[in-house]
Amino acid sequence: MNFIRTSFVCILLSLFFTAKAQYISVDSSTYNAEQLVKQIFFGNQSTSCIEVENVSAKGFTFADGDKSFGYYNRNGSDFEMDEGILLTTGSLTQAIGPNNNIISSSDPSWAGDTDLENSLDIQNTYNATILEFDFTVNNTNRVSFDYLFASEQYLVNGSPSQCKYTDGFAFLIKEAGTANPYRNLAVIPGTDTPIRSNTVRGSGSNICSAVNEAYFGQYNQPESPTNFNGQTKILTAATEVIPGVKYHIKLVIADQGNGFYDSAVFLKAGSFVGKKDLGPDRLIAQNNALCEDTSLMLNAEIPGATYQWFRNGTALTGENAATYNVTSAGVYEVEINTNSCFLRGAVQIDYAAKPVAASKSYCNYNNGKPIPVNLQSYNRDLISNYQSYFKVTYENAFGDILPDNFTYTNDLTIYTKVQSGNCETVTVPVELRTPVASTILQDQTICAGSTTRLQTENTFIYYKWMRENGEIISEGNTTYFIDDVPVGKYTVELTSTNGCKLQQDVIVSTIALPVITYRS
Image (cartoon, rainbow, N blue to C red; front, side, top):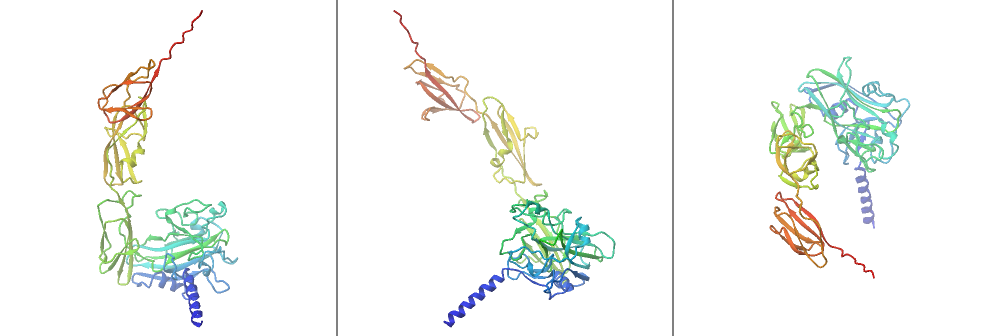
């Protein structure tokens, strides 16, 4: 009995710790602001690479001693980042999953931030949490770091009017000691649009439409590692810098309008590093993707450095040289270590497929009238590996582009031109044909009990005569007529010299006998 009881207790404890490991852990007391930045955010990099000074943090300390900023850890959960710094507009401990209630920690004395308001052109911010410091880089002209934005304002249900409300956060940078205006680094790539719950949102909400969905991560389920309704993907903030120049950066987040529906920014540990330029992204969307069966040599060479290359987040075994030859699509990254200085480079590579197209013929019939066709409707039939990014045009023999809604009357040869990005262009002929009807085949009227001949021109290449029930009477390449045809409905399938087939109906009926009336 004691053995059974002990085993039962062990099982309960195992279940308890397994459940706890589903959620992140946080710590607001072990690290001060300087330790958070230098040890966690920068990862103890040598000061010969990046010098950090004047670190400060400001937020709110709650009655139980909890703060609005501190350290977080994945804690065995499936949260996207291992560890780092958490800045929130509420209580740090309330950020821990599960996602079973709305976090709305606030205090009347907890103010907002003017710099944030000026940067985002918003007003009435509250509950601001700020982490700021000066830094100087000595070995690169570009720095970056990774982050994830989470918020209770990612609502699936509620009122559509709630979609316009959003907390604000920004990563503000300027040259230290100057009156220069701040620049916000927390923006949608390639734009000046700040990352917020109403500028990055996924489909799946019953009240708010999707926007910039490529950067949205997910709406969180109740057993989420964090207690937020939704979150973005891991994003990267990056900026050009001048080596040897001191910069001031201010990481700030705040509620807007009121203190309800908290938000948070997760900063990835060790991600604040110098950036190595591997060249521009090669993307289908930018029309500069690599062409099929080509390669691209990435060069990250820095004298005296060691390297590790990654593809889609996975380390490439044995790829430790300064260069890497790309032969397939993916996100390629390199980590560079030189005298305890860390640099990171990344580039996204797409491949544009080579079009595979075949010449085909299409038969259309409109009884001698102009035949309307939608040329783009032929795309998937003509191009066996059709891709949405292929540019498909149809041209005449002189190279003139034809309209998508096109009409023709007689047999015509046009040309399909398929272009894949800036890569190979494939051109194939397309035959637009029309079948021909017989002009001499006519309905006939015969006397009761007699038969007749049905006949077409002898210019067709194949004939198939059928009764109304589909039974074949005669077929062949010379049977342009049939004899001894009684009353009934018939069909002949005529194959023209262009290969098009046409079924033509004909009716043989009887003459009504006159009615003779005799008078006495």
